[in-house]
Amino acid sequence: MIIALDRSIPYWKEFFSGMGEVRPFAGRGVTPGEIRGADALVVRTVTPVDASLLEGSGVRFVGAASAGMDHVDTGYLGSKGIHFCYAAGCNAEAVSDYVLAALHAVAARRGWDLGDRALAVIGVGHVGSRVARRARALGMDVLLCDPPLAVLTGDARYRPLGRVLSADILTFHVPLVTGGPYPTRHLVGPELLGRLSPHQVVINSSRGGVVDGESLKSALRANSLSGAVLDVWEGEPRIDYDLLRAVETGTPHIAGSSLEGKINATGMIAAELGRFFGYRNRVKNDTLYPEPGLVRPVEGTRGGEAISGVLARILDLGREDAGLRALAAASPEEAARGFERLRTERTLRPQFSRTVVELGGEHAELAGIFSGMGFRCRIRP
Image: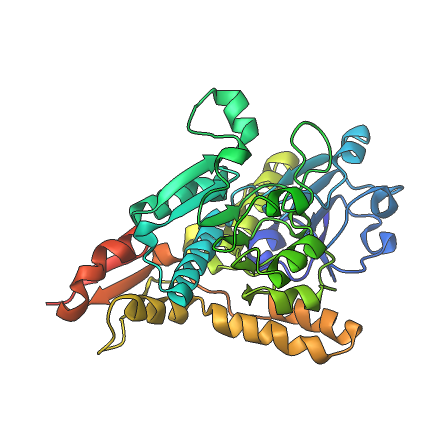
C-alpha cells in the first residue's frame, strides 16, 4: 500500500511507517502528480481535497488529521466511492485550554472577576461543551446556543442566538457552513455586531470565515465593541493585518496546537486507515504522551497575577500575539510564509489536563480555580 501524506503531520513515522510505503509531501501546493499511484491520502487543513487533486488517481481513502473538514469536497469523494474520515474532537481539549487562557487575559485587561461575568458559548460540540463546563467551574454564568442541537434534542438549555447576545463575552465554536438552515459563514457580521454593546468581547477559535473581518474592524474602530480575540483568519496564511491591528489579541491558528491533540489527530486517522485496509495499528496514543509537567506560581504573586503567570508558562498569548504582529511590516509573501512558520514550526504545548500546578500555602486558595480550568493540582505542605 502507498500512503501519500503531508510531511508536517506530527508522528507520522510512528503511526504510518508500518502500514506501507509512505510518500511525504508539502501540504501547501501539493500536485496531482505527487499522489498519483497512492492508495491513501492523509492531509491537514492546508490542503484542499477535491476533483482537481484526485481525479484520475487511485486513491481509495482520504484522512484529514484535523478537527475540521471544510477543506474537503466530501460530495466528490462520495461520488467516487472514496472513503473519508477526519479527526473530529482531536484537539477539543487544547482549544478549550486556549479559550480559558483568553478569558483570563480578557478579564485581567479589564479588571474583571470572571465569576461575575456571563459567557455565551455558540456551538456546543466537542469544544464548546468543554468550554462551557470549565467556565461554569470558574463561576461564570454560561449561556448556550446551538440551533442544530436544540432541534435534535429539544433541550431548552440551547437558546436562540438572539437570547445569548447579552453575555459579556461571546466565544464561537461552530463549523464553517455556507448553506442550509444553519449557515455560519460571516455569522459574526453586521447584524450580530450591531446588536452588541461597547463592553462586550468576541472570541473566535473555530474557523476564520465565521467572522466578517471588515464588519469586525468597523465595530472595533467605532468602539461599539470592547475587543476581540482571534486565532483563525480568512485567507490564511495571507491574513488581514489591519484586522490584527484592531483586535486586542491575535494568534496564528494555534489554539489546537497541543502535543496531545496532534498525537490524537494522527492516531485517529491511522486507526481508521488500518481498519479500512485491514492493518493492525500497533501504536497507542498514550505511549507517546510525555510525563505530566510541573509548574508553580511565582512566589510573591497573588490572585490573577499568579494565575496569569502559570498560564503564560503553558500558553503565552502575549508572546504569540507579538510574533504575529511582527509580520505586519513584511511583504505579503514573506508574511504568509511567516504565518505558516509560526503555526507549524513550534514546540507543541502540553494540555492543561497533563500539567500539575503545585501550590504552596500562599496560593492554596487558587486550587479550585486551577482545577476548574482543567489543571491537576497539588498542595505543597
